[in-house]
Image (tube, rainbow over all chains, first blue to last red; front, side, top):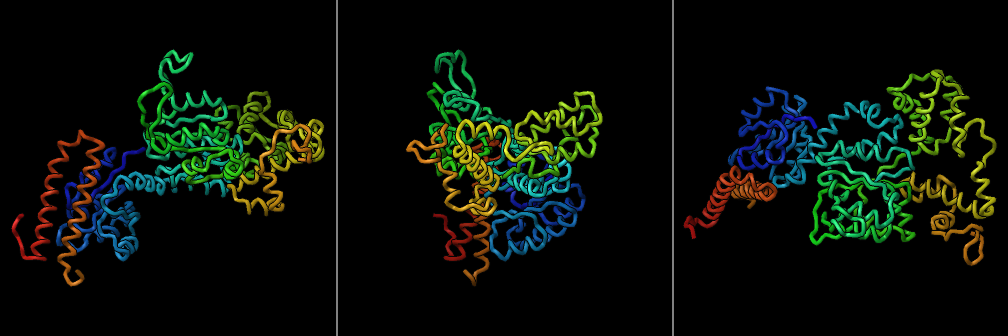
Amino acid sequence: MDKLKILIVDDDKLAQKVLAGHLGAHELCFASSLAEAKRCVEAGRLHICFIDLQLGRDDDRSGLQLIPLAAAKGVYSVVVSSHDSEELVDKAYGLGCDDYYIKGNEEANVRSILGKYLQKRSALGVDHLFTRQFITQDPATKAGILDAIKYAASDLPIIILGPSGTGKTSLGRLIHDHSERKGEFVAINCSAYTEELLEAELFGYKKGAFTGAAESRKGRLAQADKGTLFLDEIGTMSLNMQTKLLKAIEERTFYPLGAERPETSDFRVISATLEDLQGLIAQGRLRFDFFQRIHGLTVPLKPLAQRPCDILPLIHFFAKGLKRLSFSPDAKSCLLSHSWPGNARELKRLVGLLASGHEGRVTREHVLRHLTHFPSARTPSSVGFVTEDQYRCALRDGLNGSVDRFTREIVQRNLAENGGKKTRTLSALKISTRLLYSALKPRPESRTGRTPDGRPA
Amino acid sequence: MGDRPELRGLLHDLQSKSASLGSAARLLKGDPSSAREMLPLMIQETKEILLCLREYRKRIAGDVSDE
């Protein structure tokens, strides 16, 4: 983060020192009186100003006079006072202060205030955010990302919901980059490990903890100290593992495998999943208390097919540094009508394929040549409503079984896209409550399309 | 206390100084190396808190003796 120039206005030297202790990384200046503070603000180039209202025992809250002056100079002003009457707080905000907190709560406030200031400043550079860091033109996606960045500086856990390839990890990293956390961004895909391996990966282990543990190894929790732990595919984690991780998240301490002493780590949790977490709780696959620990802000990411306005900007982004591509109108129309089951990841792969081919001018045929590898492609040349995969599934599982699977997948996907709001899914899919709950109920794996008691699934 | 604004001012001062002292102690806990810089200020703040309390006692009871 840039070094900010910050003015601390307080007649109490200890209060100045306390704030300085929390703002050590920045360029600080101090003022003990109103006159001194005015001179500093007038001199300019300040980013933030922390203002104590009462500057001296007999002073009548002269700090208030500084607020409009700071606002006029574009300085982000923060009132730090032990006065907490509603009238005074209203007055300070009315004069143009940006934040107000009660003296003695520096730990809880200073970091988030710096985050809010950066957020406000970067709001001006928001175009840069959506054209360089997370490419999107979709208003709902932009709003969700800005919301997430607003909370980046807090320790609040965040859940990112979205299908594979929509940019969940990129968004997790973006949130980390906008936080004040100095540690690393440590990502782990929970579905890529067995329970035992995941435990060793997360908690680490000591030499000799198990066969093959020739050396001690630091786990991801320890790596994420003062940083962010990104748990991808959180819905695939076993209940047993959830119990262990819950304790570590709650207490920020954990035992590496084979260790006799606990280790501590100050990590912030961001989780991602494509599954409906409320549904997983209802199915008994997700502990409610674990969900409570990882659930703070929920940011939904829509599939690429639902934000076609992002397709061409993403192509330009992915093509940077590669051969310049020019798309014919029918190639563009083909790209815009494709269902993109692999989302942005699939698009990136397509751009790579097109750019490494010979054609600079891309036609519909070039696009189709590469898109045909995806069975669920919905290009203009696709025939009928049912894809080849769905047809094969019906032959294999029976028609009832495949219809049931089709129903469940659509309901669960829509529910995830709606952030778990069942009423929205009921209305979007025009289905009955009974069908919704039936689709969310866990089914035993069946190849015949029938439940174990012989009823149609 | 509504008719004693000077007491309200004293209590406000006390509240402000105690808050700073609490924050300083928490900061010191997290960074013991800052003791050399922080302790003199903390001791001074504590003295001022005591002065505040004595002043308060004086105003409500007229008693200035230090028990």
